[in-house]
Amino acid sequence: MSSEKGLSVYDESSIKGAEGLKFGIVVADWNPQITHTLFEGAKTTLSRHGVAEEDIVITQVPGTFELPMGAKLLLGNKKLDAVICLGCVIKGDTDHDVYINQAVAAGLTQLGLLSNTPCIFGVLTTNNEQQAIDRAGGKYGNKGVEAAVTALRMALLKKSLSVKPGKIGY
Image (cartoon, rainbow, N blue to C red; front, side, top):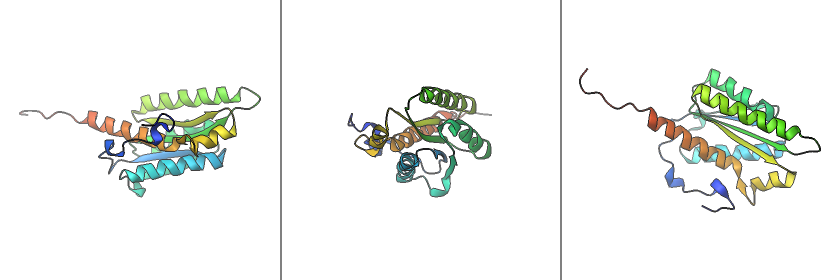
């Protein structure tokens, strides 16, 4: 695995058995030139691993701050094996980025633990737009691909650990 590309370059053969799994993707509309590229990377990665188009539920929310609520609403309406949340917060002149990033990370962590469904933090937290572009299909790969790889691995892990050993007798 290349350290420059992160999980965007990975051993595809290491992820097997994703057919029949169901995924949600929540995409923030803010910074759409970035978030929609992340979305394309995530969706393509899921499809590459055998996830059928009808097993991918997609919803959009206004901004990154709304990702946890979007994921919660999806989980309340669909049985999903994982939810990928994609957004982009670019630092500005104030500390708004810190508050948004911390709230979203905490919200997705809490939602994942309470729902027993992996909620993947696929949010770019960059200092400027160029750093976001570099991570949304640019020189550092596509972090949407990385979020999908994480979702696949976590859903498969959950599936493998949910199998109850057979009982002998009654």
